[in-house]
Amino acid sequence: MYFASNIKFLRKRRGRTQDDVASALQMKRPTLSGYENGVAQPGIEAMVAFSGYYNISLDTMLKIDLSRLSESQLGELERGYDAYVRGSNLRVLATTVAPDNRENIELVSEKAKAGYTTGYADPEFIGELPLFNLPFLSPNRKYRTFQLKGDSMLPIPDKSWVTGEFLQDWRDIRSGHAYIVLTTNDGIVFKVVEDNIEKSGRLVLYSLNPLYEPYEVHISDVREIWKFVNYISDELPEPVLPEKQLLRTVASMKQDLYQLKKSIGRDIEDATEL
Image (tube, rainbow, N blue to C red; front, side):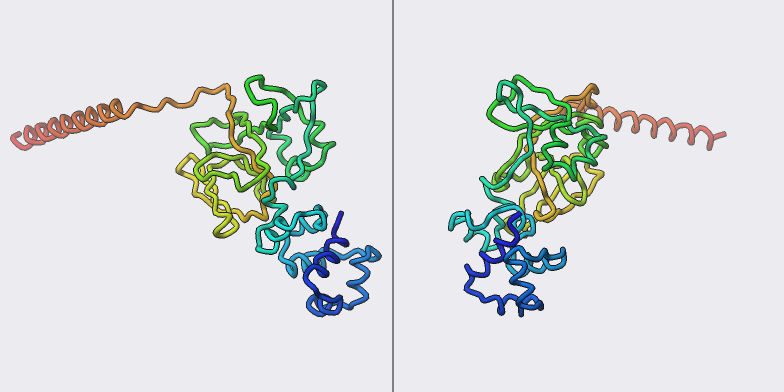
């Protein structure tokens, strides 16, 4: 963890004294000094306070050695675009490799989803997942397969196996495309994404099933994004009627309804005459 060295690095980079930062965070200077030198360990409230003060995510403060970033990456951080969240070469993925040095495809079943939400970065947890390979996928890219639950993405059936390609740089997200998104609050979701990171730091997630309303997630709540590649299912999706056939069906129904109304009208007239 790099928290101690990072808060010291950021303070010096911004030309602030320990008294300046301690006063802003309402703590004693010796306490701050202890945090910076690793003599004392800050609690979660103190870490959140530092994160807010420097406007950098806690993930970044903990996991990334900021002193090793390039000036452009640091500049991106300081402009509010978190390099850990969005950087192309900072995201570290726990993965497994076959004996021939080809990356496996790990299988995350419905039962494993709960564990995956907390163990996605744990090599031991990932190493215990079932493994397989699909020969038609690129050996130079990283894939993972997740089991779908529910009907929100119909016509893709419930319990389908959805494979995604790991998206390292979230600036590559394309609005209107489908992604598997791991979030802190909702776990693994499979949705069509609208990219609003630049505008509001959020993604809008849409279901294919119109019965489900779209909703937003803040990018700080997102842990992984996988670009949809394909799905496997033992169920045949419901057929979709071609447009012309659908129009003929509707016209036929209208004609049947017209004939029914005429028949009912005649029956009423006959009853009136009696």
